[in-house]
Each structure stands twice: as C-alpha cells, then as structure tokens.
Figure: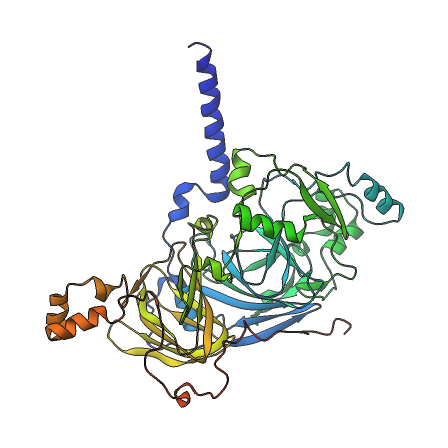
Length: 516
C-alpha cells in the first residue's frame, strides 16, 4: 500500500499537467461549448429581405486569385460571417497566415498539401534521418537546402471539409495538375474572436492586399512592423535576412509560385487516403511510405510516438470528405443524398464551433421544408441550379429565387426553407454556425407534422379526419429528400438543358499568367 501511494500521486500530477496544457490551447473543456456571440455588435437584425450574393472584389496574386464576397453586406454582418473563394495555380503556395476567427474550408476542385501549426506540438516529421542520410548529403553537396524537420503535413482533395481554428498558423500548396479551388467561411461572431466582429488575417510572410479598400489593410506581413535591428537581434540573424523576411518592396501577393515545386517530407498520397478509409483517420501503426523530393522511402519513424497532449490535438484529424456517396447520412436513389459533418464525426469542430452539410439533389427533387434549430446556415452552390424559398416568423417570404453556381445565400436561424432542384439537378454545401447544428424537418419521416397527433392537425388546420391522415402519411417513407411526384414543365425551371446533374463547378484550367 505504501508503494502504491507515490504512483497514484505521480499519476494525478500528470493528469493535472495534461489538463493545464490542453486548456492553454483550447481554453479548457468548458470553452468548447461557450455560446456564440451575436454579429455586428449585438445590434438588431431583422433579415426582412435576403438576397443571393456573388463575389464583389477580386485580388490577383503571383500564382492565384482571391475572390471576396461583400464583407460589409448587412445580412452577412448580422450572421457574423465572412466568405471568400480562393484559386491556387499548380505549384502555388498560399503563404503562412492565421486569422482572428475560426473557419471551414471546402475544396471544390483539385488537391494539395497543407500545414496546421499547433503551438507546443513536436516537429514529428524528422524521423527518417538514417534512411535519408544519403539524400541529405547529396543535397548539401549540390548546394540545396539542408535537412529539415517540421510538424505534420496533411493531404487534402476535392470534397474535403477542412477545419481552421482561430489564431493557428496554416498554409496551403497545390501539388496537383489543375488549379485548386476552395471556398472559405469565417465565423467572426465566434467566441474565439475577441477583436471587432470582422475578419482579420495576419500573414507571417509575403506582402498582401485585403479584399477591403481600407488603407490599413494594404500592408505586409506581421514581421514588417518590427524595427529591423531589434528583430535581427531577437532572431540572431543579420539585417539583410531580416529585410527579406519583412518582404520590403516585394509585391507577390498572398499566393506565390514555387518554381521547382515544394520539397517537404510527407506520407505518400495513396497510403494516406487508404489509411483514411481503413482506420478512419486514426494514426497508422507500423511501416509507412514517405515522399521527399520525388523519392519514396520506407520506415516507421516517430509517428507512433505519443503522449496525452499529443493524442488530443497534435495528431487530431482536421478534415473529412463529404463528396463520397458511401458516407451519405440520407440517401434516396431517385432524389439524391445528404452528408453531414459535425463534431461527432470530426472532433476538432468542437473547437471551431462550426459544421457543414453537403447536399446533392437529382433532377426536380426536393429537400423537405425545414428550419435550423441552433445555427445560421450559409449555402454555397457548387453545381446545377434550383429554386429556394425562405419564410420568416410572420409567414412572409423573405427570399424566393433561383440560385446558380458560385452564389451564396444566408438562411437565418429558425427561418423555414424549401429547396427544389431544376432539371439539371442542384448541389451545394452549407456552412453552419454550430458544431452540432440541428434541423427540424416539417414533412416526411421523423418530421414535425408526422410526429403531431392526427386530431391536433385536424383541429389546427380545420381538416377532415381523412385529410389529416393524408397530410401525415403522404411522405411517410421518405426522409429529408423527396423524389418528384408530379410532372413539371421545363419552362418552370428556366432551362431546356440535359437532366443530368452538373459536376461541382466547371473545371478551371487556367487562372493567372504566372510569367506576367
């Protein structure tokens, strides 16, 4: 008994230390559930009239383009959201940066690699020094960069939802053959943002230009503001190197071209995606295949090294693919599918306090009328087009119109919405301001109407008993997605094109002339 007491005390100390370290990054377990703030300084937002939005401003960089949706739009300000669409050319690097607000990124085209730099996490990608010793010596003899170590590299591809916590440095690189296209939604009303309720991005490198016209935003990276000599002393380097870090008189933008491609240590593409399928994103135990400078190597490395802190966020899964039909939460072969990603599937969303839903409707199919119980929803159209109606608490229609690709539309919390696909189908992704967003369906299986007693419906709507029964059971076997039942003329959808669903946005083959 005497020998067990020190062990118990030591275990308790480790437990307290672990919780303290985790709280330093996450703010403690309780902060994950802190209620979301109200957008635009808690002013009254009535959402009396909603409108579909398209990009209002474009900023061109050396190797890509950033499109901004109107940041000062009243409905986006009320919801506390900021939206942008970014296109990165092949071999384009989006420079390291962090933001004052968490965000979700949806990859609509292409593939690439990225880094998410958590404070305090080890540089675990340093493992294969013995295997790479020959390559390292050859690189040094040829005047190339020396051996490296860094935090985990993540691969992503079309259809991935990627979580970006507030204040955490991240970078993106397009290692594919086609431009990388991504839509990013920032939740500026999130409790993690203690600045003013608008998006601010802080760049670690380069010289960039914001989507606003404020002179304050026409600036460089955060190192540029420090005095050169003082920063040189802090870093232990000469002043000439500091001037390069500050990117003085360099106007390449936030996306730069990597002439010979990015040379970083990363798992092979095939094995990482196979790991995702077989192990659900958990860490792979055993020998792995790695890539470096176009070469492949075998080894085990330090990826199996772990401790309590490492298991909680240093190796946390940050992405989930929602384009894969096999992962659909609701599926109707005649109508389409719905795929949801929330904190139960992707735990990092507890920190980001956002979630997403991917919807693919076939020709003329409908999404059951519903309302979001605990979140605003921002939909971004990725394919086809369709009709959307939104109704407020007074029973008034605040939006009734057609949506097409690249448009966004805000659906406020508790507002009822009905969506129907055109003959070409209708596809979108919805970003929601709650890590476990909930909806209440109006009709169909497990819906509000279906769950109300027939006699309550009869009295409420002044129906006969037969009509009340028919109302409850007309879609009794369908949940969320409804197949079309009645023929509709093509003119009602404003198109005579093929009934096949269009792919996620037309393939972008060229964005900017990198030689310009």
